[in-house]
Image 1: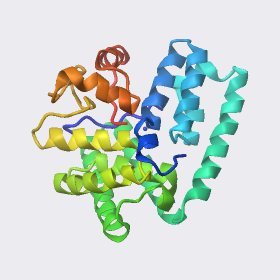
Image 2 (image 1 turned 120 degrees about the vertical axis):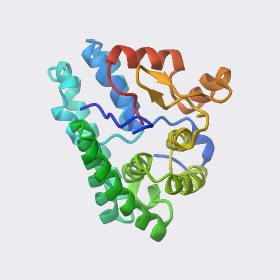
Image 3 (image 1 turned 120 degrees about the horizontal axis):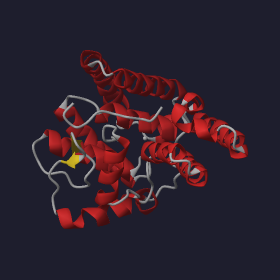
Length: 256
């Protein structure tokens, strides 16, 4: 169950922006762990899974993920399950709006499930529905950050907006998300991915090199020589490494 959001055309923080800036989101780390597991690199896989949990991963569906099957007999597998359970408990306790958090997580799960199916009409319909819901949420609460819906709920909100087809809504959320990052309510890498998505969808160069065409070809990047340094600040690998991984995995580029 790698987390495979669509391409542009179509994964505990204190209240300081400096601390948020270096935090990688869960999905790229989880996907990297899957690659390590498939390659038989158990030590690297478990180490990266631990990093994914630290970044907010708490999805129990990992248990059925065939990409991690090689890890099941390792003694560390059970320990990882305990870590996930504890992470979920912390996330639930952190949300001041638990019902909203649950609905955001449900919508994010639906987002991922429909993308795994590959039905473009179904994907478009789900994106339209989740966008309409998020517009209501943002109108009522502003950006749903960690204090409101927990770290996983805030990440789910970002995922839904990332896949919206409403560019004006994405732009308005980008401004709110930037403020949330400064306040320690969201992750800088989420802002980076949405920044690039808005730029690409608006016909402008991206800044962080997160958006790709078919064949692992990145959309144009502003100040391309400096992109690896910008990615490093976010905890992302350099472009050459990312492109190589995408080509070797033969999977669509990631949105998280």
